[in-house]
Amino acid sequence: MQHVVGTWVQLIYVDSKQQVSIRDVRVLAVGEKRLLAYCDTAKAVRTFMLDRIVDMEGLKWRLNAKPQKQQQA
Image (cartoon, rainbow, N blue to C red; front, side, top):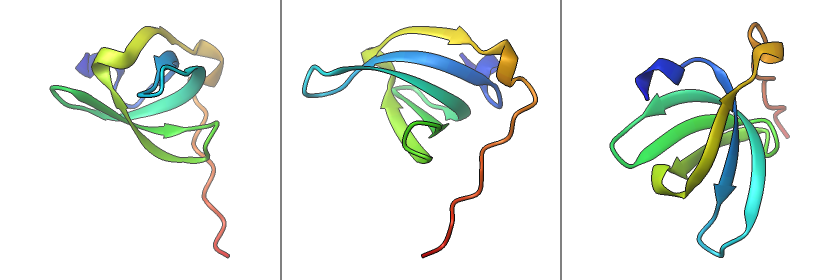
């Protein structure tokens, strides 16, 4: 799964409360059990458990897109 590091993908994810969400994320790192990514929905870096990812697809339309910088309060 290291081949997705640095790319934008769309995840179908089931959280610990069994809620399903679809997230557009830019993958920052992949470990044995977790995926670290910038989540466009949350506008923040998030950790996703690999065993809770139902499906993943590359987002070609975001190939050159960069995450927006977070605004300071």
